[in-house]
Each structure stands twice: as C-alpha cells, then as structure tokens.
Length: 297
Ligand SMILES: Nc1nc2c(ncn2[C@@H]2O[C@H](COP(=O)(O)OP(=O)(O)O)[C@@H](O)[C@H]2O)c(=O)[nH]1
Ligand SMILES: [Mg+2]
Image (cartoon, rainbow, N blue to C red; front, side, top):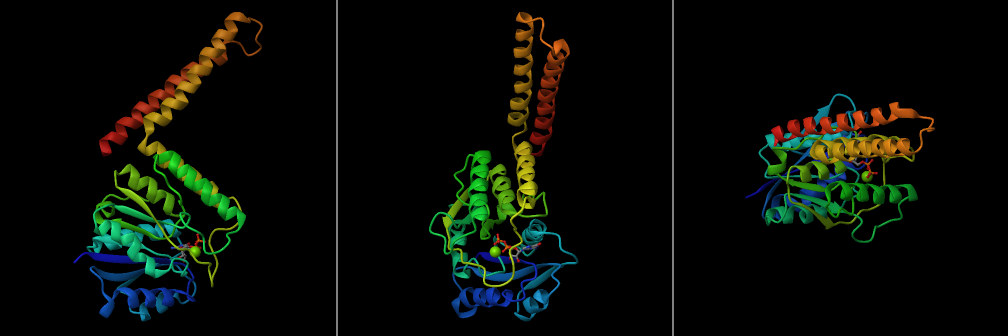
C-alpha cells in the first residue's frame, strides 16, 4: 500500500497542534485506514511554547525540532527531506492551525495515487472562502497567484496555500532555496523540475487561535518576490538575460540614431557605447547561466 507521510510545520501552535494531529489520526489511521498507510510528523521550528511536547504526547511518528526559529521554508525543507528518508511515496504538508480541515488531505493525495499528478496544491480561491480575508491578504493572494502563473505559464489560482501533496519523484529533486516561506517556491520548483502540477479546490477556515506570521507590512513581498525572481532566472536564464540584454542594446541603438540626427544631444556618445557594451555583456551572462543550468538537467 502507498505510504503517505503528513508533515506539519509548527511554530508556537500549542493551542491547536493536538487537535490537528488527533483529527488526522481519527480520519486515516486504525479502523479508518484508507487505501494508503499514513503517518504524521511534526516539524517544530524552535517554538517557545509546548508545541513539541504536545505533539510527542499525541503519538506522532516523529517530532523534528529546529533548535531555533528558521522559518516555514526551512521547516518545509526538513519535512520533505524527512518524508523522503522515511520512504514516503507521498508527502503532504498541512498547517498546524486547523485552517485547512484534515478531511481535505485525501483530496490532495488522490490525484497522485491515481497517477494524474506529481504535485497537488489545495487552492482556497477556486471555490468560496470560508471567511472574509483582510484586503491586503486578498490582494496579496491574487498578486502572487498572477506572478506565479506568469512565471510558470500554469494557471495558478492560489500561490499561498498551506495544503500541498507531492509524489516521491519530487522529494528526490526538490530545492527550497529560501527559509522564509514555501508555497510559491514549491510551485515554481516543481514546474521547473517537470512535475505534473495540479490544483484542487479546498476549504480554508478562519484561524481560531495563535497568530498568522504574515502581517500587514512589506516583509512578505520583499522576501518572496526576489526569491521568485531568482528561481525564474535559475530555470529560464536565457529568457531573462536576453530580454534585459536586448533592451539595453535596443536603447543603445535608438540613442545612436538620435545622436546621428541631433548632434547637440547633451548626453553624448559615451551613453551609446555603455548601453551597447552592457547589453552584450548581459546577453553573455545569459549564455553563461544557460550553460550552468543545463549542466544540472
Ligand atoms: N516552521 C515554521 N512554521 C511556521 C512559522 N510561522 C508560521 N508557521 C506555521 O506555518 C503554518 C502557516 O502559518 P500561518 O501563520 O497560519 O500562515 P497563514 O495561514 O498564511 O496566515 C502554520 O502551521 C504555522 O504554525 C515559522 O516561523 N516556522
Ligand atoms: Mg494559517
């Protein structure tokens, strides 16, 4: 029978962690076991409360403890790596705050069991949200879904979901480069690794205890957007560097034409040469990056 490892990243979630674990055990273990065997592990990311002790007492297979708080991306990396080492066929991430109902684990696992997908993301935005999000979260969700879709060419409706399942094919090749958070990284990375990416509609409830790590400030976008850009450059170096290099060249040639007809232009020939040289240089960087990236394929 396929082996499913559910990993729960948790940071100061002593009020809800037991509820999530118990509910998962109730739904998928013992008498209620489905057509897969399921184990739960918790990645405690340096919680200052009793999260780790409560998780251990609840009888999970393993509690992996980070000695200090490293972030959801780092915890996800640990979760995926541990699941791989445990011999999982499928790894599922679910949040510790009960916002994703554990009933929906099966929804993200099923397409992988049926060999219709390698990575399944539970979209909260394909159906109706179960509560009214603050406007900045709503805007942020739409923006990141758009940006992820733009980068990958996939039709992503939710790039900030917490419910994600992956086949072991992905566990063998994943690369989460940034510690802060995980969802966009996993979508872009799995797309870049030629996985079959799928979204299924899921429910998302309001948080009843604890606090979201996402606040109304610029921290989230200022970390996530550059990370997405770095990943895009990693997977599509030629496209990125050619576009930027050609823009410089094009501007340089336009400037050269302008100078030809207007000798009194105040910025002179140096700008033309700089634009053209820089343009060629950027294109050269693209070729170099391309060599490095196709060596890895
Ligand atoms: N490992 C780790 N997990 C975190 C951290 N911050 C939040 N989490 C967990 O990540 C999940 C989602 O976080 P949450 O704050 O609810 O984000 P939201 O649902 O997008 O508002 C929950 O299970 C949290 O316990 C962190 O610094 N490290
Ligand atoms: Mg949450």
